[in-house]
Figure (cartoon, rainbow, N blue to C red):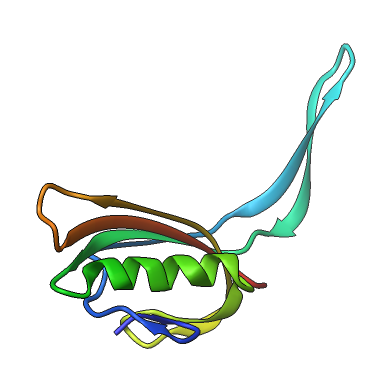
Amino acid sequence: MMQFRTFTWPNNPSVLRISTGRNQKLFVLPFDGEAVQDLGRAGREITGEGVFYGENAKGSCLALESLLHTNPSGLLTLPQGTAFQAYFFSFTYLQDAFPHYFSYTFAFRAVI
């Protein structure tokens, strides 16, 4: 199961994306084009989406949202067991037509 700090997802997200890259700065060279400076590895970004359903669906949304607003850094454990320190920086949820069904998206940045 996926977990962030004290919150454990009641059911894993249906989509989980892990992306990484490099930090680069582009400089314009007057009359000579461009130059790229490589500033090193960028942290991983973990995004996902899923659904909370059942009697406690709204409670799950509110509990996860509260972690975003109170010290958003902590240990993030992915469903396959990989764990690392991350910053929680985005959470959106939408209550659908059904009273106990909330779809959501989230985003974390791993600490390098």
